[in-house]
Length: 124
Length: 156
Image (cartoon, rainbow over the protein chains, first blue to last red):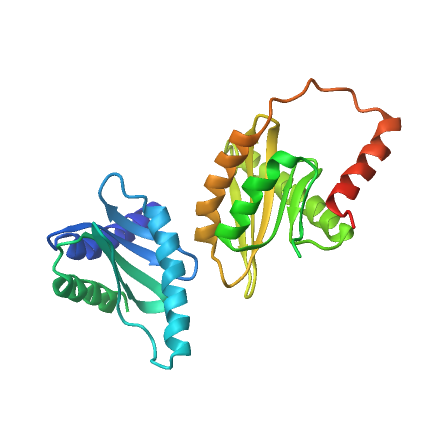
């Protein structure tokens, strides 16, 4: 019974993450428990350390939230970290979950943002 | 003022790196019997002794639950509070099984602690010297060694 429920939840999360990974240039997508920095669901390419990305993105998102709060600019809706060979984008979803994407540098960030926001909306 | 103390010097560098990266508030490195090898963040001997005894007891209790569930071993457990969480984990080293008790606050998370704990274990295993031949524990040495350990942990 429990295994069935887990499987359904797993399939649901997997389908949600598929909406992100089908964007060209995305190397992986994760659902992260934001406060804990733990992986809830993942769809990442081989070689991506999902647990490390989850923990560090969770920490980054918490700090960015505090920064935005201190600056009096409200709650962050979209985080975009551009690096030399890729990017990490994250959108906070319901109850503190983060939808995170790891992408190539050439990814269409606008399209990725829409996909992440859509997943975050469904999570709510 | 640094509140890091170690009975065994090889534990210092890995512990320093771990507490900096994971944002740990308190950390105890000990044997399953509760004998402390190093500590970070504690200021009173009585707190170290209590935490070591309780941490070792937690691991013993969960090991018994693992036995009932026919699990080989539980490697780590986490208790989450409002302002603090505790992470207790065991690992095998050239010195035998060791335990770590980590207390973290809202500036860290269980994910970060878990992540950097993996590195901590690797660093400790790399730094661990070849174990000396085991000597029998003699009653006359016990109190002197215990006092030496406490003096190392809380030298003023």
